[in-house]
Image (cartoon, rainbow over all chains, first blue to last red; front, side, top):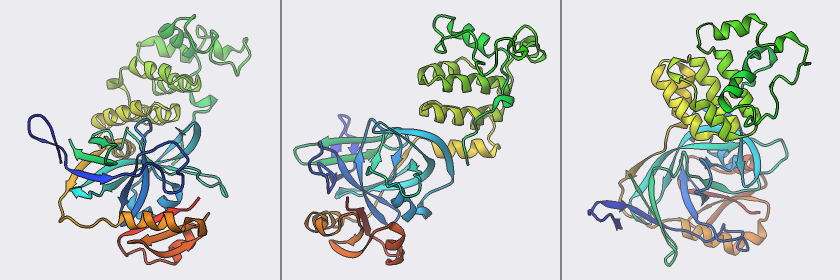
Length: 150
Length: 212
């Protein structure tokens, strides 16, 4: 795995990422990594310009038992759209293809949509409340996303 | 839980403009006027900071009340400028504020888009009032992320076969939710609710995706 100059671990796990969501090859490149929420695997986009673990609302409904109490938040700006939703605590796991898994307690934002409205975005791993205290690195040559605890 | 938005009677209108102008000066005020209470006519006595019981009370001991704090932050939030909101928060002596001040301020910070400030307020409020249930919940939900290595034996990841399946079969399932395991379709349905009904969710390792 990856090491700091003093010999300590920088990253303890690695997963291969996709350059785009499974169904949107025409969009600009993304870092798409698979995470686990409870027993369920989800496709998420690494978004260091974003906040929180933004969970697709229907997936959140599917994984409801994985979420803690909620805090209503007025709005979060996601990709230029102001979205209302709730903040909740949950645990996600980055599953290592090499090395060791990393479980992360994160703040999740779950959009609340009006009836009949579908969430047009995937799920995101933002910085504050999610990736902020992880070590991570990207190797574009291998499509490898390295991660480790601080 | 819903965001608490103070109504007119919930906040101390007298003195808000004075205080904002004291902070930012008349030319730098983001509100473009001398008074924030634009919902009242100019001759309404409630706007007169020199003629009112509440105005006097605010200046009597130099401290701020909960209504005062909330009104200040509410005004800053409504200005739509997150930097102004953060500056307002930074100028308040939070060591002297009540749990209700912190709770209101966290809600307002989230509504204003000042998410890091919301976390800082929640944590500070929880440190000062660890028994307060709302602050306890806020500090828990907004806490910094914590990562922990999970040790387990190396294994073959099931993710890649699922992605392969999606690439090959997505054209047949557009608009549907699909549940896969190790590259095998378990169920497909137009909504999550219908998909849930087709699955035994106690089973581990199910991969979910919606085919756009």
